[in-house]
Amino acid sequence: MGVRVKIRVSIGKVIECIALANSGFETDTPQLLVPTSFILKNRINIRKLGKPENLEYDTAGGPVMMYVYYKACSVNVVESDRASQEVIADLVISPIEKEVIMSDALIEELGILIVSPRKGFWRFLEEPSEKIRQSYPKQYW
Image 1 (tube, rainbow, N blue to C red):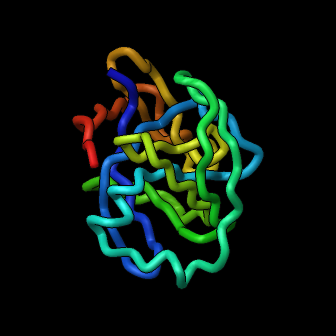
Image 2 (cartoon, rainbow, N blue to C red):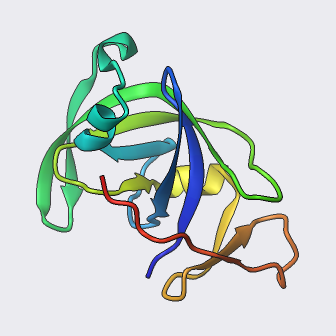
């Protein structure tokens, strides 16, 4: 199943969506990967973000070139009873991915603790161990 949380992303406009917490997406800085279709459907003007760097990322399907806009968005987790702090993240645009994905560094900065990846259970780091939250369903773009 994986752990998916509701996030609020600010990229010139504020968008709420579901993001996969992927600890296998290893980065040195917080990164939020979004599909090209996410950009198009939300009518985000990426020209306002400046010039991206075109970088090759290793994926399960092999290397893929992606556009990286450094520190171009802010992200926080939003739940009915609370929200996390906002984290400034690099925006990575993928031509092949269908889900919004958080890197390991972003997961950690947002204070997400993955309790059971298969069952989709998680909690905020500072919450008591008995406080278990459930994942949201997949959201494809």
